[in-house]
Length: 240
Ligand SMILES: C[S@@+](CC[C@H](N)C(=O)[O-])C[C@H]1O[C@@H](n2cnc3c(N)ncnc32)[C@H](O)[C@@H]1O
Image 1 (tube, protein in one colour):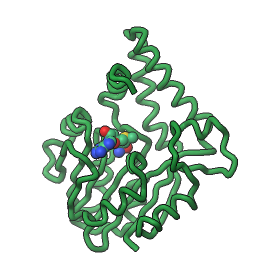
Image 2 (cartoon, helix red, strand yellow):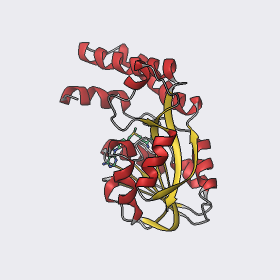
Image 3 (tube, helix red, strand yellow):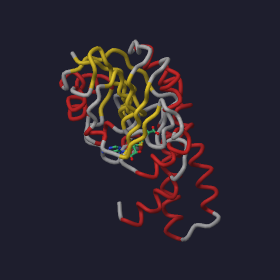
Image 4 (tube, protein in one colour):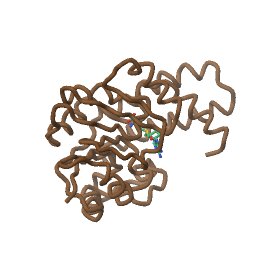
């Protein structure tokens, strides 16, 4: 991505409610299968603007959520919503460097930057005894995906199916407790606000911004076309 592309990207993405697909029901499900206890210490690792913080707080009475993201403006956006809440700590930082201890590490749409087999062992030390990690990972839902479905993931070389993800989790020294596919609602919760943003920016866009907007629209259209073939698999895992 060139410097200018980055600028366009962050203009499109500034102040969106979330930066990847997800919905409250995913968090509630993951917390339930993890047996999250009252007072749980939770990390939202690569939180973006904090779209999951409310659901995480609702998942366990008296929980405390530390939300970490590398992009300062996303944490600023989270601050506007959660800065006054004592149950929430917001940090600009690297999710690879979290130390914990946490009872629950939640990471939506970010583990795949480095991969399951790199990230899970890294987080093992940050996990309290009995703790769990929940993360979403690109996944193929068919044995014969179309080129368009594969292209959704920009050449992601670890792209695999549910069995392949489970195998990576095992090789990382963890066991899969439960999995579920992210729903269409989760994806539309990400893409509909982005579409509104695209419509607004079109009115004032220069040529370069139009190119970035075309790209964002193409991404949305591609997911809608190929959503039966690929998407995110949410896995809840614990050390083996
Ligand atoms: C696809 S977005 C998902 C954000 C959020 N979990 C959500 O679902 O709305 C990925 C996020 O990972 C963050 N990120 C990328 N590398 C990171 C790192 N090394 N440490 C912390 N955050 C990182 C990005 O800034 C971005 O907010």
